Length: 248
Picture: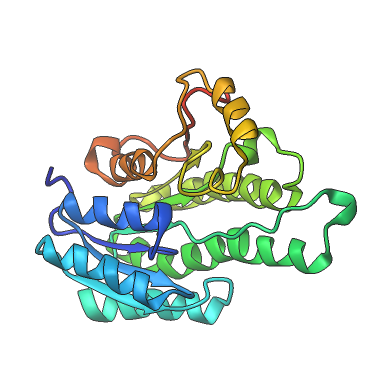
């Protein structure tokens, strides 16, 4: 697959899990990739080595996307190294789960800052160069939790619902210059939400999924690559659920 040959991509939170899978799939499709991470330099370097082994260029950039200046620096560094940015994948995210009555202000603020504000910061930073070049595609990582809610995840659900609203607004604002903005909403993915579940609860969840299995990071990455490619050239403002049918 070479649908993204010559394209330059930025993936936030790209050192592990879904972000790493997205970075690898974009590279496999032909893109050069800048990976952002906030911790885990060794993991980021390992993904970089994998991508470079494919014959693609890969830049690793540390930075906290919840800080506007660091998000802008991420975009600036990628453009300085590669000359342009064609694809932004806003994947960086955190969880701080608790029931509403027990949730601390700190845990609320942290999740909103990284998941929602961080997505806005990177989107804002990349919008000017993309508008100037009259092309580009942005894929934001939402969640089915942002659509249907989930007990114990008020902060996470609110942040991802916000990402969906941001996606639709940005799509309307940027469309006239040929920039598309979409979101992917993962369901239960084995590398993320299910890793700490006990076996009984995990089995109950699995039975609620019509396809009968948890998703893999590559399932999400495939949807991101599709949205980033010319195959999705007439799609903007859309939220694609990748959840095995859980939220039909």
